[in-house]
Amino acid sequence: MSIAEAMVMEFTHESAGTRKMLERLPDDKLAWKPHQRSMSMGRLGMHLAEIPWWAQTIVKDESFDMASFDRKRVEPDNKKEILDKFDGNVQSFQELLKGQSDEHLFQHWKLTESGHVAVDMPRLVCLRGFVLSHIIHHRGQLSVYLRLNDVPLPALYGPSADENM
Image 1 (tube, rainbow, N blue to C red):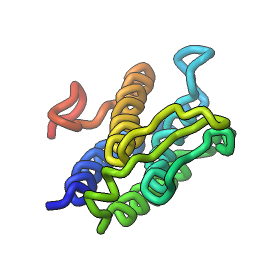
Image 2: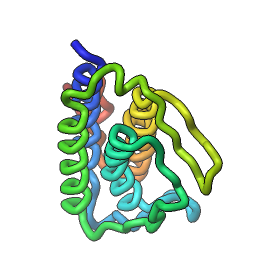
Image 3: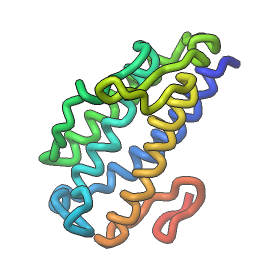
């Protein structure tokens, strides 16, 4: 099994859990925030949906300059918008990784900001950090948002307080 095949398997597993969490987003609470400096629930959901896009630049490009990044924050109108974006980006990630060689995934990729190198690591490490770990981190954050709004949490790695496997 190649590294790319293993990563696709792990990403597919984690994406299923993330989708379960996103499916619980209540349309009438997307503007809710636990604190004034926090993202809204809808923005957090959209951020989760957008994260797999990073695989595109990590795999295809030598580097990415954050100065060129459109930092406009999308506030979604409904859960369907979030799920559609997530599903499309998950599918793109899975297709992009298929057939990538171990050699390519061990080549370095750089994240820069106006010429300053912020990250210079193997693509594989960037995919795990910027995509997989990033999704898991914000999925945990979303679980708190949902809990604070009395939304039952899905079982992910085992039963939750609300759902058995």
